[in-house]
Length: 496
Ligand SMILES: [Ca+2]
Image 1 (cartoon, rainbow, N blue to C red):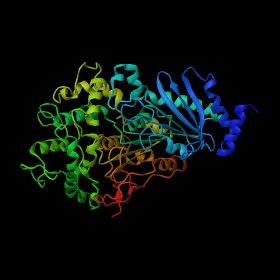
Image 2 (tube, protein in one colour; image 1 turned 90 degrees about the vertical axis):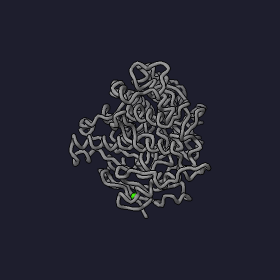
Image 3 (cartoon, helix red, strand yellow; image 1 turned 180 degrees about the horizontal axis):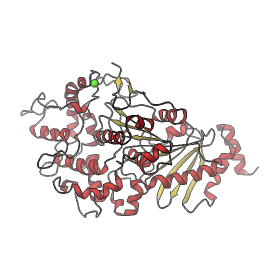
Image 4 (cartoon, helix red, strand yellow; image 1 turned 120 degrees about the vertical axis):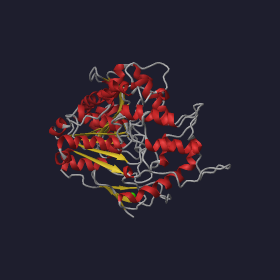
């Protein structure tokens, strides 16, 4: 036995892992695999106490997609998991649990998993300056999906000597958009696709809505009117919305299941007098809040996109509140989308606040065709036997849930309800904000991958999905602790 073999044998003794797989992992970087994959590091990792021993492979997939793959050394379940990157991507983030890029939950289930940076590198949220390169932009738009899939299959074959028996794709936000794109444009690659809070209409959400929010919330000097200090008033706004909207869905459970039925008024909230407190609103604040709830309109009052849903107020702090020095994430994303992704010509020195809702809408169409994932023709995906679960927080104030509802309805219009339910279901999650980025209200935990496996591998249709909260136990503002999601148009039920 050489030194490496002894090392692998000892590793196998301690981890119950396969010395064969471990040895292959350690020598992978030295192999001349393919001109399309450049491996910078491949090694066994067994010291992470919350993870099974795995082969950690890092490198680049041509043309320029940074990746990390994690393949179990011990019990591989024979399956493949691919994550879609969130936001404007740019980072790999395999360990950021619950983020769109995370893969550890799949690794724990025995998957060979991979996550990528979407084809460019940037660690600055909202930075989309990389998108001035049209080739890089196309990778981000969707081509990252097949490039990554092909490379991962090759690595899996190299390590395990065979193809995976099932393949899954999962992502949230932009990763959810990529998930839908996978079903629409690469229908043969995945058996199961999980699309969370997807920004399907990226040009509408990132262009029209984001510029509207920025403009609505900017004073004459460009400072936000609802700034980071405004977070103290959010509990009051949330209570105001829940008081008016909770019962309209038929169940008073602290959650708003039918936000579309509710027009929130601010009439009950006292106006601020001389002394400003956290339980009053100024006229200026009321005007902004009204515009956020109502959503973008043009100068003749035509509605151009949805409004921010009632019940999402607590999440505004994370996505929409900031100050001039540290703009909100929503503002940073808007200042990335419109100058660098929104128009074909990437106008120089452009600010999202300049977007003209009367004259500029058509200018978003070309890039919308590239980036949006709104094509309802899932015929090829359905014929290939694929299944897709889409889910969306009904209190998502960043990527509005209506675009998932519209998409679902478009697919039903094309295939009929019964046929659609054979391959595609949408689950709305009341009180949930955008993905898992922060302690959510309720619920914050559900096992979509398990539900997807059951559907794909065992033919168990997802008719209800259990959800529960594991954070905010002390927060009594919402009293539901456990619940069940049902396929849209049925609504979720929460325990009283
Ligand atoms: Ca309710």
